[in-house]
Image (tube, rainbow, N blue to C red; front, side, top):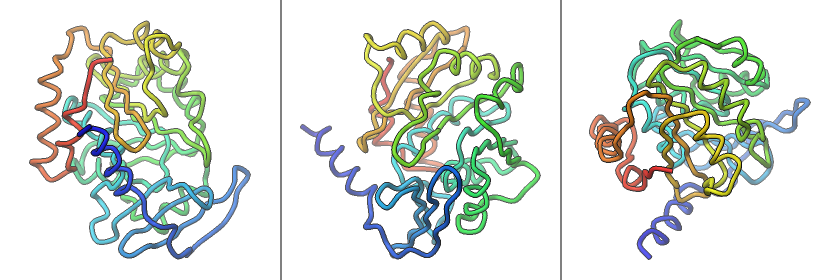
Length: 261
């Protein structure tokens, strides 16, 4: 019952009213909408669902719980460059850059206008350590084989659904081949892949260790590693708690739900 209550409260906290629209445009993929509600600035690709949210008083602090859950992986692998597939409003990017301003971050975004709007309205870092690429995620990964990323974050969504690319074995293999030994792939996924699903079996064919965290807001974050030595769940939870102590993100309530898949 406690977990159900936690989930409901997190969902309510994650969502604000649509707010006052301050910018709207469209590209070949659909609408790009920016709205404000109180101290929050919100990016949407339709008139209902939030793609990204920023507290204008502290832009580097992630609001959505799935972003906080994704961030846990940086406490497990602090070496190597980081790749972000999908930008949105840059919530994950701002938090990563604030945590380590000198770590190299490669950001891949399909839509040029999303990047332009994010730069104009969402305080993206402008530094030589952050490299923005307008590209298709699959094409970028084909060129990044052997790149040795420490962490790859994949958050590929349109207005209404997750990109099906994220659930394919070929995509998982390309991510694995772009990671260093001990690196992590972090997926923002729609649902927990049970042991009868194709994704579950694909994850264990491609990676050696797989964990997940249900965020309480409908998403599940999946963490997959190609490490040669198995990770211990308790150690991962303890390491993740450092982010709360360091003021990066309040992940204590999420680290408790980190589980081996």
